[in-house]
Length: 223
Ligand code: CA
Image (cartoon, rainbow, N blue to C red; front, side, top):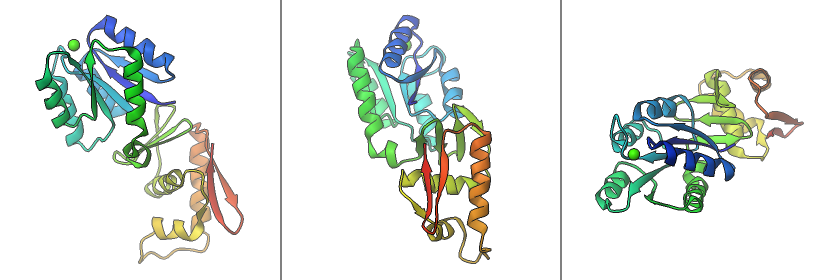
């Protein structure tokens, strides 16, 4: 499920947006302060963030700048007041991807979010999602159903390779080339061993993904 982080301090507006996004098929976590929002953004790989700029404890633009400074490329849509063009400009300068002006229709917000999620950045970018599995390739964090799960460096690289292939078979040779360095001695069954370790990790963390062996060809990741 596509997960949205909503940071909005106005309780009734937050409820309205939360309900609307859920009805549009998104998973939503809502927080009313910049501090809570920032720590949620750090701990989970959200697909997008809806950010109000006027928050009680800290300017939303500050929070956004912080995220970008730390290399987080998650799409961010800011909510701004109708008469505040400066806010919009400051927000976009700070790294927002889009904005919606209050008051807005829920339909508009959902449509804008979908457009953001369709951008190549979200598809080819830093956060990969298949089934209940999200891979944040910047933070190098695997999440299954929103829970962090551990992977070794090579298991992570392999999963990323398979997820980026998105339903195509990845050859054994391609895996060797991408995962192992030039100077590394690769034993004949290194890839098989790594695949089998990754399969166990995925199974034990409850990931709804499986890795199929296409005999003589390579491997295919399936939901
Ligand atoms: Ca506010």
